[in-house]
Amino acid sequence: MKKNNNILQKNLEEENILKQDELLEKVQKIKHVSLNIQTYLKNEKPQLDKLNNDYDKSIDMVKKSINGIGKLLKSSFGQNTCFLICIVFMVIFILYLL
Image 1 (cartoon, rainbow, N blue to C red):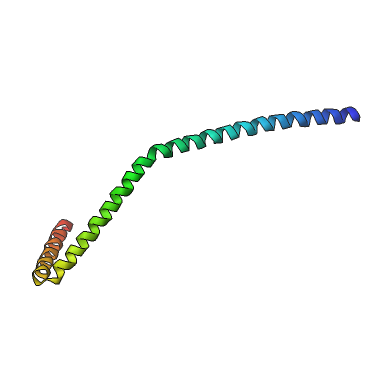
Image 2 (image 1 turned 180 degrees about the horizontal axis):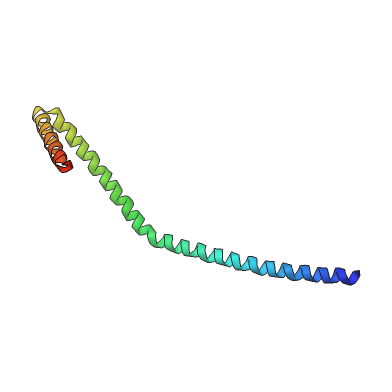
């Protein structure tokens, strides 16, 4: 009986060692992937910052355009001009659909 227990314990220890090795391999793979992600993010950060700056510039341009359109609409000449531009765009859109 004692011999069977020893054999069983030895088998369990071997199985444990195998499981530890498998776990170690998986942890190393995860570490490698995480380091690759970190490197990728470091390389992409300048591009993301540039994109963010371009987006901010675009927002400023849109705000200025909206303010300019608002001023134009307040004047009587601006209302007529905007009305004419809207009609032209509608005609071009309708012709595009045909």
